Amino acid sequence: MLVIDTYALFEWLVYQNQKYKRHFEEINEEGAFITELVLMEFYHKVLHSAGKEEADRLFNTIMAKTETIKLNTERIKKTGIKRSQTLKQKKKLSYADCLNLVIAEEFNAKVLTGDKEFKGMQNTEFVE
Image (cartoon, rainbow, N blue to C red; front, side, top):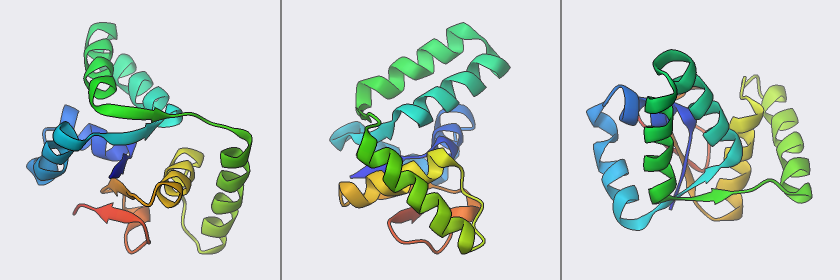
């Protein structure tokens, strides 16, 4: 299973980057995980740049194929720890990115992304 990062959502749903095609075909068949933070970040960015109608359309597309992972106390703490670890490794990952890594570890999955900060990291399906 995959944990979808905001970067991957934009590459596939907005920019239609064909390098993501096989991953999103897999997601269409098997589903994927997505965090509340990624949903919020993606919705906001699409709303801001393309308007409410497009943001709602893409949001509904995502919701139909994914399982939303909610925050809880343990995930919040683990995300804080993960962010501290990655900053010490000179990686500039956001809280949403670190939460994605925590969820990938929790569900024995991989984060789908092309964000350069993830390159070479464990539990990552990096698309160049």
